[in-house]
Length: 262
Ligand SMILES: NC(=O)c1ccc[n+]([C@@H]2O[C@H](COP(=O)([O-])OP(=O)(O)OC[C@H]3O[C@@H](n4cnc5c(N)ncnc54)[C@H](O)[C@@H]3O)[C@@H](O)[C@H]2O)c1
Image (cartoon, rainbow, N blue to C red; front, side, top):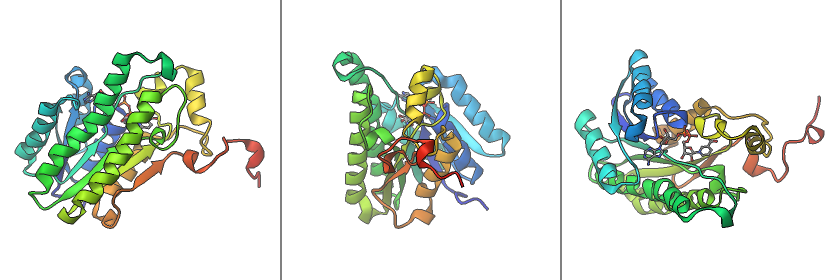
């Protein structure tokens, strides 16, 4: 018996990284999963589908640009058409751009806001419109450690992720009485293509604030998402769960000097 037997849902940004690991984990627990990602990531998304099917699960790929309202609406419709319901949604697609605040191009700022912020709002909009007519559901949004604290060289990303936290809390309160539970996760430095493609010194500075002085894995994030989307989290709503090796709970970077040796 899986904890998501008989349920269906969607995962955006599921061609790789956190989204892929979470889609696989939902399917392992019995859910039927829509793997959503941009059309340009088709082959990677189909790889996610193949990994799920090879493990005995059920998934389909639906090409989706989360920044487009028509795609967001069609994604919900496609999930319901394929699997009969939308019980959970993991709004996870995102992009990162780096640069000091005054150096960021306007086009880069707009792109981040349209994918990382508007994309989450559009997804929630159509998911909520469905769920409130069909007995509720669970939504998890991907914010970030950068949604809780400032992060040098990531101004627009930090702004978008802080806004995702605000949207999550507000929508969670609005739709609580309709059986819709909405929460967010705030990952720290996780070993995915998004960060593993950064220069080594940038990767090191991402890990530095974490008392657990290593990258987290996409699978560690997936377990937290499944928990929030499951009935085990039935009284948890509007929360932002940090999965960051302790980064945001400590004012001090990892330092062997401040850790006991025995
Ligand atoms: N990796 C980290 O350290 C880290 C930390 C905190 C938060 N996050 C967040 O986690 C989420 C997943 O990122 P990841 O680390 O797995 O990186 P990733 O780059 O592997 O995955 C992001 C996915 O989103 C997809 N995507 C981008 N734009 C899209 C669009 N317009 N429509 C649909 N899909 C789109 C990409 O194609 C990609 O498959 C992102 O929201 C990211 O901001 C990552």
